[in-house]
Length: 407
Image 1 (tube, one colour):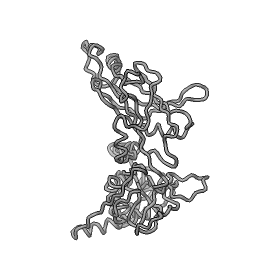
Image 2 (cartoon, rainbow, N blue to C red):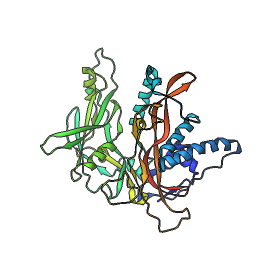
Image 3 (cartoon, rainbow, N blue to C red):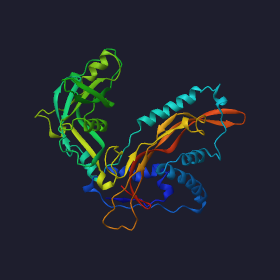
Image 4 (cartoon, rainbow, N blue to C red):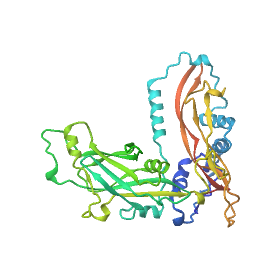
């Protein structure tokens, strides 16, 4: 167990969420056996900043209630504080009749949505995680079971590799690439130079009828002429595997393609070769899988609540906010029409030793912003604006003592 950051309620719940994510929430990958005690204190604010902090605390109080109790009134207060408004704009259905969303506003909202959907939780590895990330120290070594010039299948034996009552927060596939010999590189003959190839990683699920189902989990451009380890994010593949038949090995496919259409790019892509299970290859060259896990029992959180499970442990439960059903948002908020906000519920195990910080309670450990498109009244006319509202989605729940989060 590690104890971090005796922050104020303000700092914990919205004034500077990035501060917490980098200093506290992102350290969640530390394995139970390797964790250390460390405490980081926050400096006292200067007098000149007290007024701004008080104002921010008003927002924090609303956000705190939002992520814990999450009433509609709390959410209204948080939105008004964010926009600097004292009351909900008086917007009626007639204000929407001739409303046209400008292209630049639509593009901005779409860009925010893409970032929102692509945003993944990341955690900083502990010392043990860093050591596992060094080639040769990986948790699991794999073997290529077949290989051709553009596609390779790698298999990892996963039995008993993920500890019980734990969650995989991140998984990395490490492949060793050798630079091609000059004589194997196709001649350009007037073609534009090609320096990269696209390498995509697919999770492969063998089906009972003998066929396979594949899902793309990562894709990136790899320099053709370089030698060294290349890392791919396969967290999604491990999560897919854990929800399927866990007694089976995990199969991944490596697809190598040209960085752009054309025969020359395709020929250059064939120069990308990763070392295999060949006995002549160095041990370090074998494919490796690095897992970062979170001990849920130690952390007092069991992930999302299971509906049919008889347990009162701290977890994240679904809580849908329907903007169209609320009288004060049905015309004010254009997009989204509603969203899954989630909230924390359940109890926490209390440590045998009294650390003097009070009782551990189920609280928000990590949250995410929500992009929103909304109307703003400016005199006699109405404008459309887009913004990200912080702490609107509960990402993770955990157990916290008074002003101390045990992560």
